[in-house]
View 1 (cartoon, rainbow, N blue to C red):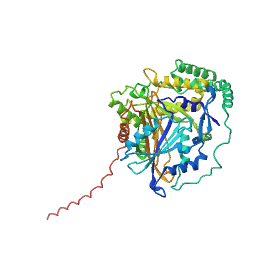
View 2 (cartoon, one colour; view 1 turned 60 degrees about the horizontal axis):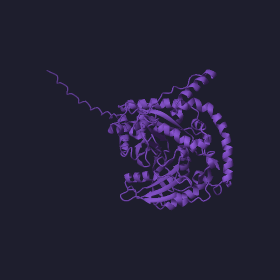
View 3 (cartoon, helix red, strand yellow; view 1 turned 135 degrees about the horizontal axis):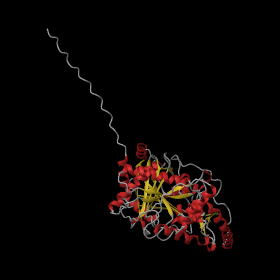
View 4 (spheres, one colour; view 1 turned 90 degrees about the vertical axis):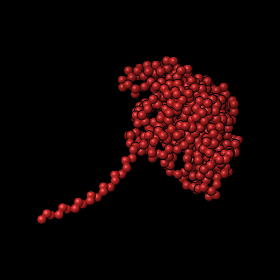
Length: 503
């Protein structure tokens, strides 16, 4: 048994009929590299079966504590049914990218069954390109971006030949799962530990409340600043990193979301992004966030709602240490950065983005890695779900202005070819989460010399979200350095005839 952390439990608590808590990815596979030049669902099932002993999150089932006295537990599912989780479907002809995006949007709109391990996998055929799509859907309570990459690494190979891994016997920890009485006793013991957890988290979380979801509670941010000044006076330390108060303007995608999604995807050249990076003295991430700002600016202008000031982007940052690799769960921090959609000039916007993200990184270095979990420890587990929904609801849907406008996430990936059951991975498009107040999510993953963008939006708020992909390309082109043509070789000078000597 493994107990969820408060941050893991938060992703479960925030789930409603409109908000789902799972993340997904669409892997595009080329079956021509397999021995049979085909890929069937039976091949995927055989691969998962072979790797299952090394993938404990795929076997975990949720087990609640009676009366909600403590955070839930993950237990091995004794009745695990692989055929329930691995599915297949085909697109109708002609199988365009738009049809694939629509099918993905419908599948990710549906919540996962909490009575079973929280994941599904779909092998989708009928693509116009002749490739196959592998849609993987797993709950955010189980993984974050880094631990999701670990799972992907165990399912993929470096060569078309499927590697044989040492699994060290059958899966399962052979630990007996307690009955209701045993779980109740665990819950009572956990509830007794709550005051100690809260007391331990207090020194780290209280001075930094302004960087958490609790900032919207009246007086919370001011209390944090008072505690920070008191700590500085006692310890005689220098002041903290200056915190800029970011105010998110209201947009069409800032309200309450529906239960339905739109999805669009596409690729950009990583070399082109690096060329822009080198030309303007910034990072790859600066360029990605800047062109996202430019594309969103175009959408806001097209809908006659461009705010005078910048938007506020929520940017997830991994705080997973090397010691925490392989532990799964969530080790992240949600940072906020000004997104300069109010800047018209693309180069000026890039430089403003660079400064904004640099300031965000400086704030991040000054914060404890466990801040989100520490802040959650102020809430007793017995009321955690309701309190988490209420707090996050205030943060994202308060009248007038939300705390954030959208999510932008950049996940670095491998720059070498990978294979799934012998089929070459052509692209891997992320499909992430939207919530009330943040009805737009742009996530990008780099792989094999390109950037794979996955854009998710609320179906009613942004029915034309597919426009963003074309605008991302256009914004990148505007930033590309002008390539000077090579100088033309000089024409040889024609010798002038010598004047004849006069007699």
